[in-house]
Image 1 (cartoon, chains in turn orange, red):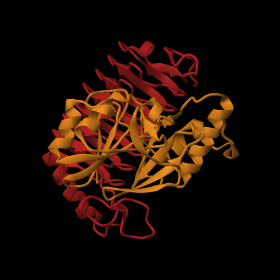
Image 2 (cartoon, each protein chain N blue to C red):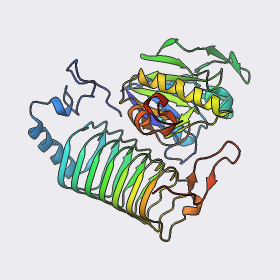
Image 3 (tube, chains in turn green, orange):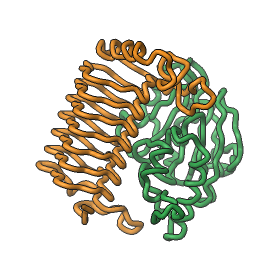
Image 4 (spheres, one colour):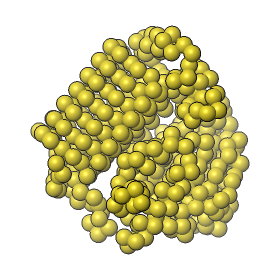
Length: 195
Length: 210
């Protein structure tokens, strides 16, 4: 399995990820926020075809990229919305398991962030979208709502391997172990920490 | 790219070491394996999906190389010099670096969270958007480096210098510091306090816990 962080080279502030098989074949694009010539080269030079597009939280994505990608590739969108700006999607919800291009994709609910938000778990990768970034749980309303989001994330993370790599929409990657042990927002109040 | 093969021992949660079916800790021939990896690294080149987590590295000079999606988690580095190396999507979380020097290197989207970086030098390097959260740095020098959008949330920064560095939009939130210097750098462009819902983030100095 190969993983490309597509915006790394362009120094964009939002991250998109491309999951690909070891050889040529169908790839999965996660949270495309732009689609540049460099990204197209990454796909084409590796003899990949974008067959699936996973959206963790469609409202926070710039949709123009998706329009461009769908003109180039016959890809299917997976999101919690039935359609996005006129593009039909395959609706997903927390608890679903998808089989995409040989990858098993688990959909993890995250209603505490938004009723349309989900995370996607593939092998030892977790794509968490905008709900959190390294060291910081997203601001999503009141203090209570943020605490509930932190609690939901903590519960989800504890079910994953500590070595799972966390790939957020914003900022650098992290690991589940690093977040559970070092992220003050995720400190368990029952352990004596403070949210 | 990332090599996610698990260690063949069912009781182990770690990933298998590069070109082996077990993780480094469970290899029967750790010394031979180390020698092999040392030889490869000292020759330089492109490394992709190299998993050498938990392996000790001592007294090495690594020439021009590219490391992509490599795992060095919980590894120990002592007296190592990296020159003209590029690290992309690599993990060094909870690793220990002692007397390690990086010159003319670049790190992009790497995870160094929870690492102990002692007598650690990075010079003339790009470190855009890396994760140093919860790191313990002591006697560390970042000289002429670009640390744009890197994160040092909850890090301990003792006797640490950022000289002539760009720390624009870097996060130095909840840090513990003693003799931390930003000489000829731009800490006013960094986040020193937690972003609030209203402000979208506060730039510049904020009270620092000592």
